[in-house]
Structure formats: C-alpha cells, structure tokens
Length: 289
Image 1 (cartoon, rainbow, N blue to C red):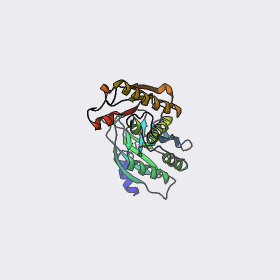
Image 2 (image 1 turned 90 degrees about the vertical axis):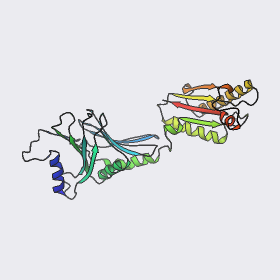
Image 3 (image 1 turned 120 degrees about the vertical axis):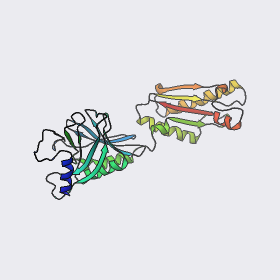
Image 4 (image 1 turned 180 degrees about the vertical axis):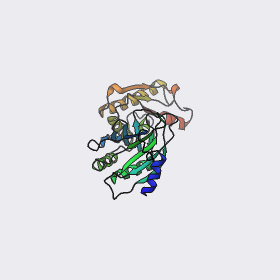
C-alpha cells in the first residue's frame, strides 16, 4: 500500500529523484488551530473547516435530505483546471494506519472547484471520523507547472459531527420549493380556512419563522362564476382577508404580506365546467425571495 501511494504522489510530482519542492504548495491549517465549526437552523446544517490561506471546506445538508461536501477557494479555478486526486492519508505519527485512494474528481471552474454528492460526502466524512486526513492533489490552475496539496484535518471533527447529525435530525421536512406556492381550495360560500387548510398554513408559518430571505408573501384570491359577480368578488376578498389574518395571528410579519382578490372574469380555470369552478374557488399564497 505504501508503494502504491508513493507511485500516486510521484505522478503528481510530489516525489522525485531531485526532491525539487519549489513547485509544490501545501495548504493545511496548523494542528493547534484546526477545528470544525457547526452552524445550523431548521433549514440547513453546515459543518465547516477553514484551510489556512486557501479557503473553506464544508459539509452541508438541507431539508431536501441530501448531504454534500464542497470546498470554496479564495482563487477561483480556471476552465482548464482538469482533475484532482482525492486521497485519505494518515499523519506521520499514525504508523498503524494505511492511506486510501478515494479516486479522481473534476475541478469545476469558479469559486467552488471541488464538490461531492451524497456518497462521496459520506466517504470523506467517514475518513475524518477515523482520524485520517482527506487530501486533494492537483496541478495548480494558475501555475500549471506547480502541484497543490490541500489537507483537511480530522482534529475536532469527532467532537462536533454528532452535533451536526442532531442538527440534521431537526431539519424541517420540506424546502422552499415545497412551500413557495401554497394553494387552498374552498367549498362554495366557504370564506374561512378549514382545519386541514390551517394545517397547510401552519406548515408555511413554521417555514417563514426560519427563512429570513423571504421578502414577500403574496395572497391572491379567486372565485367561480356561480351567483352574482359582485358577491363572488366579496367572497374572494373575504377568503384573502381570513388567510392574511391567520398568518399575522401566527406571527408572520404583516409588512411582508400583499393581497389581491380577482373577479370571476380573471379566473385561472374554465368557469363553464364544474371541475374548473371547483379549482377557481382558491387562495394562493406565493413566497418571493
């Protein structure tokens, strides 16, 4: 195994007969400063590690359930950056451990050149948990004759990874896309939200309490064509007003809310059919960031 890793490192110019280290740049945080920081809400959990002079490595999981790993760099990668090798290496004092080759990954142009999806992220996390140092090796995109080695430290990881998992357990089971548009369908002459509709609104409220990026909550009411048109517009307004009142009562900032009720001639569906009229008895709550 050691011989295999020597061959891998030789391929990247890290070992050579002349031992010319001028073309090698190593980025890692000093052991005394190495740690992992947790930032978490009910919408997203982040576990970050600052790499001195290079950038920030991050595990991230959102309420969509997907764990990802990425490295954000100070010097954006060029479009011709190529590939990197990902190894999991022991420290010099870990004589009982052997390194592992985790394979190649593409270098993506821009500020986040290294990105791993669910399976890759879990593999890197597992290597850190056993005390190994996941290490990226690649030819520099600024000076292609140079080789760059970026090392993640496992120090402090085991003390915070359980907190990260607890954060993930507490994530809301829905995302912005799930609640961006909420539709309430009404029975004829119904103006106040039913119990099931209040449950829908409660889900929306729980989300809004966590997402400070929502800039507007737009409430729009529609009506069918049964009865007098002026009465139908009154009913549409009453539905909108009742939804607005409920959201504000539950703590939604009234300053975020805008409302509008539409006449039957502005219906979304065909009022000449029962199916269309049923869908037109509706209130839509639309979020904007």
